[in-house]
Length: 336
Ligand SMILES: Cc1ncc(COP(=O)(O)O)c(C=O)c1O
Image (cartoon, rainbow, N blue to C red):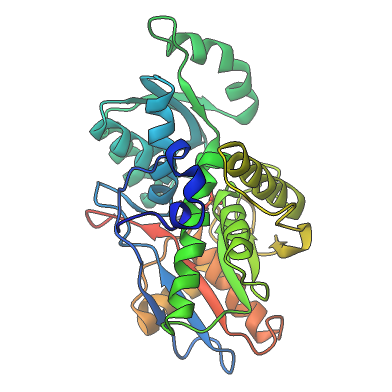
């Protein structure tokens, strides 16, 4: 893609908000038939986004984060995630290409073939792995981790789980502006709801802010919470959207006042099952359906739970007449 849409919308902030292109947009939109009865269902497919060893939503966040790391002169990124973290893997792979090191503190999650494969990829990525195992132990180890990964008096650049900082959320402000362009071009109808998995909130927060900035007043973000190890609710996600707005403003963008209201985002938790990474029958069913009927490759931790929720909510009439847009955020590579 040429100029980021965020720079086109806020040219006054472009110099202070550099973006490093790592993928090609716009990502495709298409109708998914046969899954939701009378409610029209569309998909914006982020799986192909990213030219490196991992794709999907993480890459959009890294496009804004990596320039910020370089701007601050840090040499190492320190972040956290579950044992099979897509986020840690994407960070390690794209940071390595830019000469940056990555260290990841890993919290236990249920172990299965998917997680085993991700851990193997993480080991091959060259990231330094710290098996801190629980959230409490990760917090306790934080001072040591910062010291261990400081170099020449410089601390590591810390990124919260999932890259859900205001800088990371800019990736989904950009994606929402891209969606608005696709709607304006008639490639997809204006959705009543955009449904996405919520693992750390940055994707949903960026989308909510971006949709408002694009003037899509009718579209609501529905986040399906798949992670019970972080506090994730409509307040925390809209607070992150507000912090992202403040970041834009601090970098010079002329934004109107409070852009995102808490009720712009709905978070649903009933599809989490026993917790983060625990499969649910509904998710497994949605995953099979998506593969068989729509040729969509979902994974069990995030996207299958999100689609499972979407299908149940559509059947319950919770989207009205729609149309609903599902965000396919999973971007595996090498058959992962
Ligand atoms: C495939 C996939 N989808 C969705 C998400 C959720 O995105 P976020 O962490 O921004 O809530 C993640 C990561 O957490 C992910 O790996």
